[in-house]
Structures are given as structure tokens and as C-alpha cells.
Length: 280
Image (cartoon, rainbow, N blue to C red; front, top):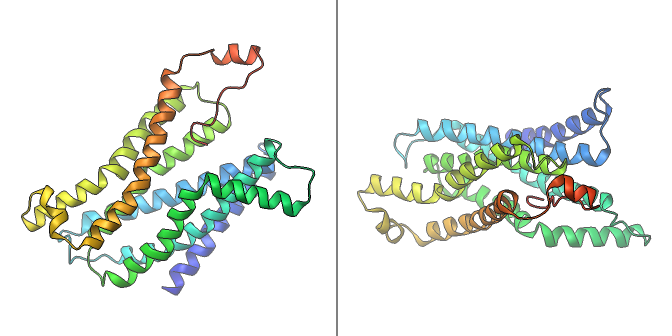
């Protein structure tokens, strides 16, 4: 366990620093600190998501017996990914800090007061995401490593595949950051993001209930009543924020594709900036 945790603690922050410094100092890029931080954070999240979904597919496709079959990648990657959630809380704060500076929220008050104000707005805006990350570290990690006792690798693999939508979410945020909402890439990415998020984060839970029903010879509607209550509680806790975030994505997509108002060129001529807060 110790080696996987240490490796994760080195890889994710190290990749962030490498990317940030590269974007700032490469001769053909030389991005500003704020842009380099925000894009690097999205890059690390995408890399972790690709790794997690790949591991999830390998594990779930290898475990033919959904309860007893085991795969060595399950516990190894679970331990490796724990430092990511801790790092990402800090990375999200850095992104928020730089966005506040870009928007002119830094005041003439003391640095301590400014820091307190930024922390307060960060926790207010990202409260659900911070709680989700802490829940993954403080609850899901002990449960997956200790409480499972080596059973249910198939289901943990399915849970890891939920990360498949993350690279598209990150790309959408970067495109919005650079005011590229009008491009074909943003529209295509938005469609893929909606589909992957719905399939991998919403339908995932009914699918796992259905798979267990097939294994136990039960119709899917009887599965919740035939398993321990803590399984249903855990599924509800994990699924609830996914439904909320999917609602935000759908609302953003509706605004992007169906809103009636001035075009981008008209808005710029009138001195207004296009709304870029859909996924911010």
C-alpha cells in the first residue's frame, strides 16, 4: 500500500508542476501563470480519468464472477489514486485563486483578509466537489481496501469507469476559458460530454443493480431489497451529486444551444462579453 500511495503523491503533483512550468516557459507558448495553472489542473484531471477508466475497464472485463473474482489492479490503483483527490482540492483552490485575481477580486486589504475571502468563496462555490473528494478519501478508500475483504472487484471496476466523462468536461472548461463556445469543437465535445456523463455516471448505478440481479436471479426492482442497506445508502450518496452535476451540464447545454440573444460579434460591438460561466 505504501508504495502505491507514495507513487500517487509524486505523480499527480509532479505532472501538474511539469505541465505548468512547461506552458509558462516553452518559447512558443509562454502562457501567463493563471492560464498555465488552470489548464495544467485540467490536464492532470484528464490524465487521472483516462488512467482510472482504463483500469476500470480492464478490471470489470476480467472479473467474470462479479463477487469473488479479483484483479491486482483494483487495490493498487485505488491506493495510487488517493493522493489525487487530496492534490485536486488544492489544485481547484489555485484555479479559483487565479480566477479571482483575473476578475479583479483582489482588494487593497491585507493579504490575510484577501486569502480568507478567496477561501470562503472557494468553499461556497466548490463545496460539493470538496465534500465529494473528501468522501472518496475518508470513506470510499477504507471501504474498498479494508471492508470489502477482496470481494466485488467487478463493481469497483465499474465505478472507476465513471471517470470516462472527465476529459470531455475538462476540455469544455478550457474551451470556455478561451471563449471558444462558438466553435464546432465545443459543440461536438458538449454532445460527447453529455452522453458519456449520463451513461458512465447516471446509468452506471442501475446497470450495477441489473448485473447483480442477473447474478442473483432477481428482477432489478427487487435488488435494493435483497442487499444490505449500507449498499443502497452508499449508492445514493455517490449518485446524488452526479445527478446534480448532470443537471448543471444540461442547463449549460440548453443555454449554449438554445438561448435567444445577441450573437457573439454583436455582443462584442455592444461592449458585452459572452457568458462563459456554463461550466465554470
